[in-house]
Picture 1 (spheres, rainbow, N blue to C red):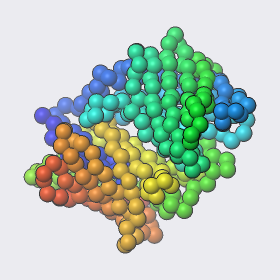
Picture 2: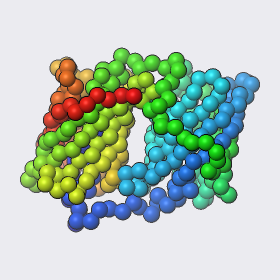
Picture 3: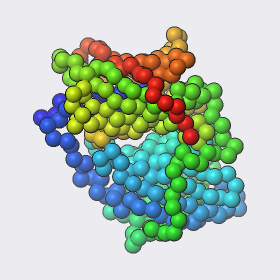
Amino acid sequence: MNIQCLLPVALGAAVTIPSFAQEAPEPPAELQKLQPMVGIWQGEGTVRQAPDATPGEWTATIETTPILGGFFLREEVHVDTGAEPLEMITIYGWDAEKRLYLLYGVDNSGRSIHASPTFVGDDKLVSVLSGHVSGEPFVARTTHELSDGKLVYRLEKAVGDGGWYTEVEGTFTKNGNGEARPAEAAAARGARAGTEMEKLTRLAGEYRIKGKMIPAPGAEEVGIEGVERLTPLWGGTVLELQTTGHPVGAPEQEYESLGFITWDPERRSYDSVGFDNMGMAHRSAGVFGEDGSTVFTSTAPLEGRPSVTCAVLRAGDGGLESYTVHSMLGTTTAQQVFHCDYAKAGAGGK
């Protein structure tokens, strides 16, 4: 029997995970449909910046690998257009609460996207997106079509009151020549981390974590310990967070998570996401508190019940200091479910 708990996934995100289970959970069967994406792909195609623009050419490499015990896929994309490079990281997985596939992506400009892709048949993965570009609203549809060792990609978009047009299209071949590069090795030319991200990337480094958590309402506290690493990507436009930990005295019950933080200029807040080796994913929004702390809040369904989480991060001149999470689940009263203190172990950033 699994005991449900609330445990932070790196800085600023709180994830609900099955912890201290007698048996580790297995990746859901739905993820099998994503497995054809795994591997290194080489491709080329065209990009059009506006409906009436002359198409430009691009070449790209994609490397997709299973992560976090096979519960998620990490896709790294490196695009060469002959001008500014485009670097992207996308996480694919399965949201068991919503019974939907999930997609989260960041790029070297600091933008992030969230979507719930849907399979059309067995070989087409379709996502819809919306937002603002240059002050105008847009809607977009992406299609990944996989067949016979090839990946055909298409991005269609409509901006403002304009009509639909194909912005990007191309074809990839699996296991082509060349090697994918680590994402953090390629900083964006011309992109610069804004003031908001600089406030967080200054905290980069490796930290030892020690604290306590409450696995479930009414349960006794459990001691936890681990390591958290904060790494600025692409000149600091994105902050990547990697956490490993376990209950005190039980190193075999290893917990692992991956997270990203970006700045959302539309909402004027941080966009924080986290994924873990129990198959859970979480998203929260962060703002600075009056006392200099950073406060991350979120609402999400959990086992059919609403949950509310508030996490407070405190930092000083020496880096991260503490992280405290309060949560309400269903009709329960708010309680502190997690607290940890940080001790910096080394410098971060690449």
